Length: 90
Image (cartoon, rainbow, N blue to C red; front, side):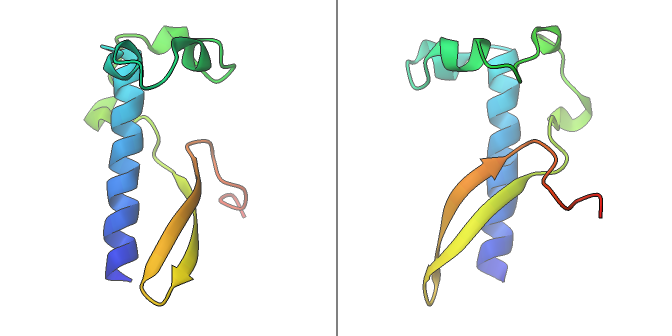
C-alpha cells in the first residue's frame, strides 16, 4: 500500500501542477508536449480561471485514478480523472 499511496499522491500533485500550468504560463503547450487546441477547445476548459490561483494551488480536491495490478509489485494507471469520480457522493 505504501507504493500506491506515494504514487497516487504524486499523481494528484502532478495533475494539479498541470492545471496550474495551463491556466498560467502554458509551458507544456509552448513546449509542444500538448497541442493547445486539445486544451483550449475542450468544454472543460474554463477561461475565467486564467491567472487565478486557488488556495494551496489545489484545482482538483478529488482525483479519480484508475489503477490495475500488472504484476506482484507493479501497477499501471489506466486513466486519471479530475472530475468528481462516480460513487464519491454515495
